[in-house]
Length: 104
Image (spheres, rainbow, N blue to C red):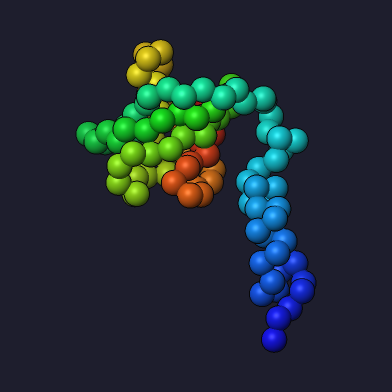
């Protein structure tokens, strides 16, 4: 039997409002993100995983990893072209993309 509730078996709501439902909204962010496409690296221990930084703000970034699916929840994000690096931790993971918050 099919249920029509928001949290039931019907996937209409999730399919049509997926981005709003599952990702942090712009109102929840403490600073505005700007879209960029820059090469970066996820650094932890003596390992490095290549990534692409898709957008960035003063408080965090959205990245896409190009390597192993697993790495620690806390790491250093290095942006190759800028020569900058920031300690951060993962806020969310979805479809190969990762939302991180910069540690102060």
